[in-house]
Length: 226
Image 1 (spheres, rainbow, N blue to C red):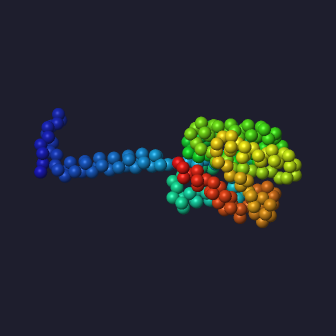
Image 2 (image 1 turned 30 degrees about the horizontal axis):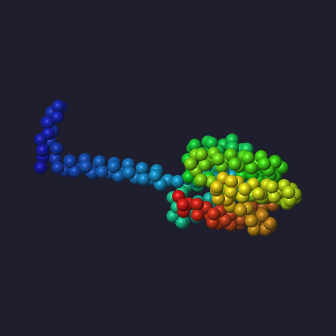
Image 3 (image 1 turned 30 degrees about the vertical axis):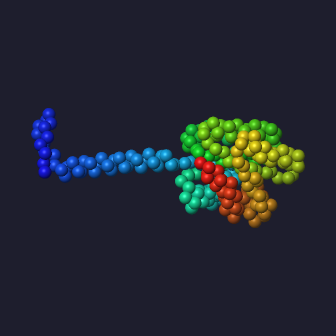
């Protein structure tokens, strides 16, 4: 049934069908808006800040452990997107130079911090490495992100005292800053020749699923408390 409506421009008829169409359009717009809001509310980002170990050095990026971790998250029903900001050859100082931009751009819920090995290989003082890692953790926490610290070791030919001081930075910082950490992520890999590249410093493609699984064992409990 048509209804007469007076407008300044003149007389128009609004039918029941027309009203229904308008209501339907409004409902579609509302649902689309709610969908966008819901997606934004549940979208979660994990930033990986690392060096060549996390940057899929000398292999296709999709073969690296970071990409495999993304697949594991999806397979287990987690809505997180993993953003890999790792750069081969990077140091803790390099991480400090770029972490602010990464935090501002991606607003991560969680930061996987895998840095320090290149500092150690260059013989940097362990106390300086620790200071830089502490600042990286602090900035991440101040942004609202949790941190999972990924531990590295350096070759034994650097001497027991130096290698112990270097490695102990990780558990000591985890305790000091109240964060979880993954013990040496190349455990059972670094000394297995067929899992390492020719330089015996970088893991090969065969090792990547093992690294991803090792990180996942420590990451999943952290996700469970969010």
